[in-house]
Image (cartoon, rainbow, N blue to C red; front, side, top):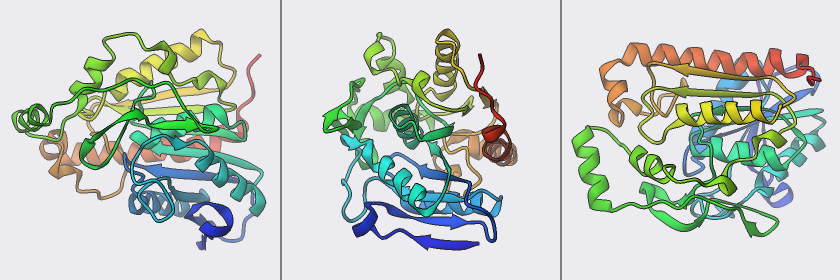
Length: 293
């Protein structure tokens, strides 16, 4: 596997491309993980894709030199730079895979960038939410922006002491209550406009996501796409066992999520199966997908 480091000064891309050897440059996938643009996790996940035969570009969108410090009006254009970079290298098609908060970003970016023609969203949410920093500190502004303007978002409310007591009571890291409460009210203007995406979309979720209601979000987005007569293939894979970090990367999730502590083997199996679904989506569905009449 060949590794190509992007020159940030020249490309505005903080990332590394993991390229399968001796193959025509056809498809490449932009990979992002986590709520703080955790680059090391993104890099490791991109390596996993590369080892499975998928050219993958891990990118950071915050928390690194030259990038914003927090998820606070992050420009969609950060992903556009990554798309442009891959196109300049010679790739004909560009897909994207995001996990958690990065899945929200992936869906938003794909809804604005027509050159992204395949999406895998792992543990996503259905709406654009308020920006956050490390340790879930709320920012009071939108997470994302486009052409210098913040995108409509759903605000969140959290008392740190309530959050701390809630986590102790639940015996796990748990912020789901914030999102459940926020989505009790209509926020149509903040719904991610997934119907604008120009290719197939795979949603992946787990029953026991304690960060936010990803399963319900996937169901909501699937129903919305059906209502909009979406022209490309869609699929929702949900797993009984598994946490918010539904990827086969050792992230120490068992320390933070009760389901991971109680059912480690079942959770690992779900992560492996989910990853296999993602790889199949990029290698088989993408390209064979025909725009439906």
